[in-house]
Length: 57
Ligand SMILES: [Zn+2]
Image (cartoon, rainbow, N blue to C red; front, top):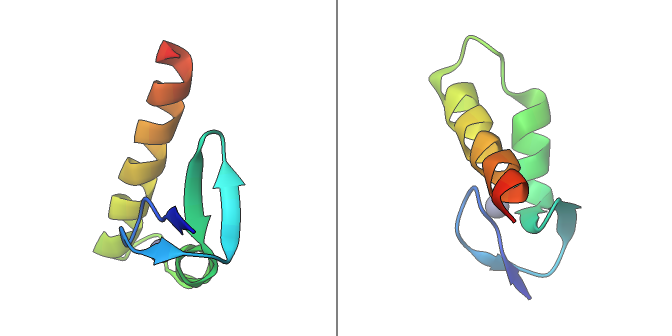
């Protein structure tokens, strides 16, 4: 199992984004969340962290 970067829970189903992991539940959440929703900003923020990590490593 891997730890989801959005919900921080250990999940066995999900996708890998660079070196990070997003569980299926969160992936669906991101897809369904309106871009005006404050939650969306949080998701984008989390994914920006992934990209920055990728550049560093
Ligand atoms: Zn999750």
